[in-house]
Image (cartoon, rainbow, N blue to C red; front, side, top):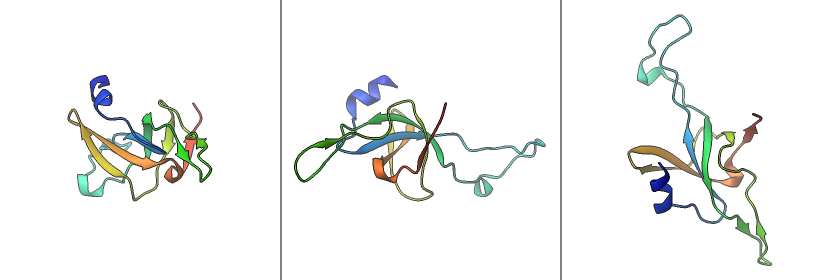
Length: 101
């Protein structure tokens, strides 16, 4: 996994995340079909860019750091495949919240 991030680092205020796996079973043990599974809105931050720039040129650092657990919007983001793993690229401002650990 570390090799993939040497090849790709987000720029500006972009954040690279990996979504949590979708629930495939109910609490009772019934399998959920793929079409009926809910979209996963939780993810782990994998890499962040240096931050966005204001008109005066100062850099505003991102609000998240690698390892943070975040809540994503239902739609949006750019899907990226690195070393057969699926990741998503969001702007820092699009991330809806951060979970306390």
